[in-house]
Image (cartoon, rainbow, N blue to C red):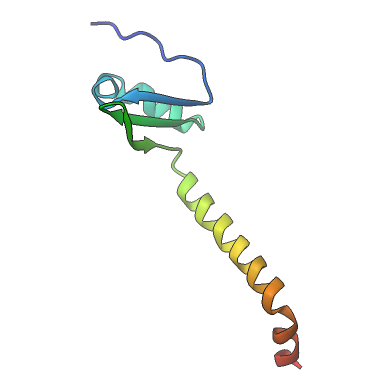
Length: 82
């Protein structure tokens, strides 16, 4: 059985059953930077993402938290540092 090519899109959505037959192709897409959503019974169940994305998100969240903390508590931290 020949699978049809994936549609050109930024993010993809494919059923888990179809993904089984295309796993190598989907991994290639994720390595290229795309997010592939795997759906079961018409609802998103999981996502295949580029390997560095979770670390990137965690790092971005940590930086955002540090900025909010510094904005909120900067004057107090400055006084404590004196």
